[in-house]
Length: 574
Ligand code: AMP
Image (cartoon, rainbow, N blue to C red; front, side):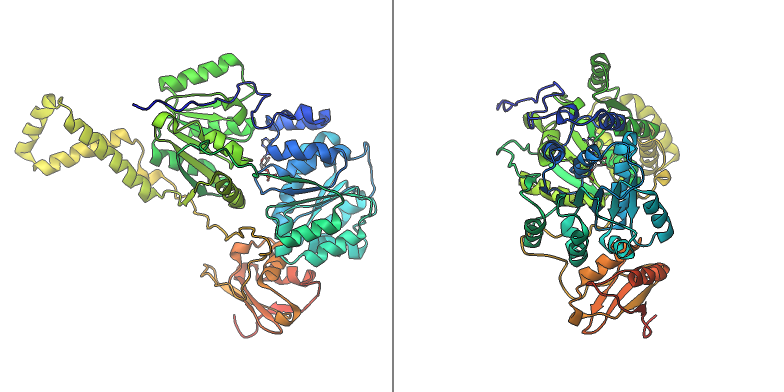
């Protein structure tokens, strides 16, 4: 018999994460009390790798070039130092920091993050993007803001109007720079940076590092610190052999998706990892409300509370442990069959650590990751670093669940048939067989067994929307953009309309320029855009009829390849 491979458990001390022994707690990074207070209120237990590496040099005023995808915690990595460096007691005045982001959605998300982290410092943060009434932006700019988070097109509009002045900037952040280039914002970014003071801190984050990003960094960054998340190759053999899969699911549907996955997988015991204490508490409550026996485990709990929770898991009175990374350190539960990442872990090392909780000593283990659409890229990074494939599966449908429940009932019946304790029930079957066909009797018995094993009807189950994954670039140097002149359209409900744009191939327009202009300046997402045709002197873009006016207004308001042009409904087509 082969013995279990020797395993090094990570230390249980929350201040020694075993990933990096430089600075392992937020308090070690030199952050001020107001920021530490905000982080603790948010339930962040420790910095993510990118935060650990980026915060000290950014606090020291260095430029930084970071390769990191969404899900690594990069927003806090640049937001926290920026907030800390903001002069105290500012009122009125021009912004001290400008963050450029590719989309409206990200502008909102990043400003919310700034608000959350900077509320005790009284930071005034303003998102600026197309499609939002300009009056509100003008009023806020007039009153004075500290941090502006903007899409390049709209930022440039405000600069041209004289309503956004960059003379007081201490820091410029280019977030998701590769996306911004793909969307055709290169010229806008250059123009914006020309208005910023020479003496400033410049921070560039990008999920991939094609040569254009390198060129941009060389031109605009001075002696930058370089950080790459996911560069370390986990030691061979460190990644356990575990069935690994992922589901792409919108945030709002995550609890339902988790429930569905658990129902279909029916784990003996599972651990669900969350990023923060707050999320652990919220999810535990939600899952208990949905009828699962979930227990929370996080760094804010006493040893006694933790022991109680572990006891319940071992005794089988709980079947779900919802935990943060810190709390789960050193945890060894023999019954564990499943690890679920409720969020994509912030670094490949952390993924490897988490899934190492199962698949031990030759037992089968399953690791499931719920990723939001934007985090798809981080999954790819994890695959690359671990050298293991993470299959993207469809969220099981109600029909899948029904099939699975029937399979479980069948397996239970088979087991019962193989046992030798059916005699006491013979009298029932015999007496019923006088009156009914044996098949009918068996069917009724199966129904009762099935209903007892899976209480609640399948009809109560909701269908969870599947999210189509947008094709992602793999980040090979030199390869940029979606490429191609025509993207196949998708049939859509509610009808579509063609928009005519008076610039085409001669003006250097590429599909990504049009997608970028639309998604950057309106609420329309790339997924909603249908076919794109680029002729020599004009382009046609198919968009949902319901948003055509917004798209036209947004495009008229912005520039494409740095130029204003005619935008209207296509006359020849609906
Ligand atoms: P980002 O990669 O910046 O989009 O961040 C991904 C998510 O991680 C966001 O929901 C953040 O609120 C969360 N997050 C960032 N840093 C931490 C941390 N140190 N601990 C827990 N959650 C974090």
